[in-house]
Length: 513
Ligand code: GAL
Image 1: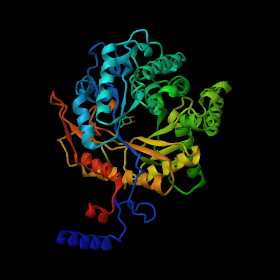
Image 2: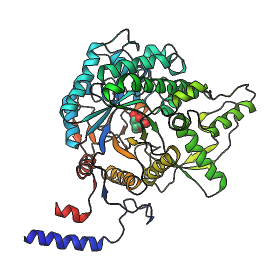
Image 3: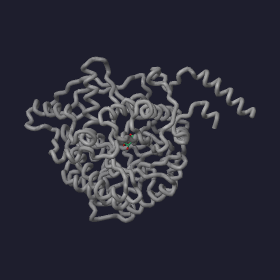
Image 4: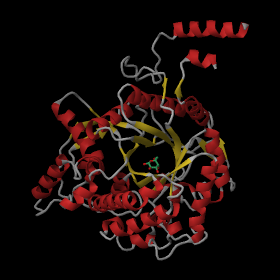
């Protein structure tokens, strides 16, 4: 009785004091924009964490798995930080039980992971199936379901079977049909247990990094056309796989199929007309490159089509470097997703900057320059500064541009550099609290149709070209130890608390618990 009285008095006192608005970052204290918002998500909100096959599985050549472009790339000297590879990484191929136990500790109701195409089809095509690989995914899915965790499965998270690269990878038109055959197999095989599918993870990133600037596998440097051409095939493959599911599997399996796109928020650097237009162009041209065809018109954004066509003409080309869809393809693309998967990590300032080089650079095609603000905190990745309000703006832009489409945040998180083990990651705790708070505002105040939040990532893993130098995990992994032990960080506990409360309880609600 006395304890209750004391807690009530304390709560009233605390609330009285905290009539002061609360802010999480010292540099973001706009009373309208940045003040902390208490509240809960809808009861069916999806909470999860994400991983990707090459980044966590290891067992790169075990049990009949074929090589992927990432095996080839990481085995090529000079391509990754200290020539590190995903050969073993977190060894998740052998650690289903432990990974699922850690998911349960977080209290998530979803786990987003990707299938290693070459573990299932060593040659990339369905004429050769690897039963051990198929079994691994069945075992993982069964373990998740037994723990009441819904699988959210990404079909392609960058580890293309090497034999498909040998015929040109995503720049080869044939990949359209080959991907659909792979998707067909996966829907058939796993679709009785999986009801949330993502066709592609971040096509902008893997086409630009992989086919245009060579920073990621397969390391092509086809400046000016590689990413556009690869992306064109990817979009068609996505749409055909979507319709295949819709007709052949949905009536029986009742699932949903979406695509995951990466987007930063682009804030105009100044109030000038030129910078405001440049910021609009940046988000429309970049996110819209894959989002407009799927969620809006069936075609690329007009602004990008015109700019690239003009630039192509200006240097004497007779057709645009940006490919075109046929009318039939546009019809197939338009509306080809049940949800919008958004991977969002950070924000940039955008200013106008014209580019007319004879050797074009896709990053410059849209005539803008991106910079970061020095006052923004740093993380373990140069491109990642916490700017939580950018995510809310990003979500609102999606709603204003594409309407009431259901949105899942399919990745969001922050890195630290490799170094002595650090479990007390209060900066990451702040990042997650702040970003999740912004999506709560987007959902409750702005009416964004937000269905779920999936954090990146369950545990430290192989961060592509950065190897093990950038750690994003809620769980720390000791890569020196052959057991690859996982240890929860403070952020794991903070995330579990948010999930348990399904949002943010007011201080007085907490004391009543
Ligand atoms: C995303 C990617 C993930 C992960 C993350 C952190 O672009 O989908 O695989 O690496 O970035 O950088």
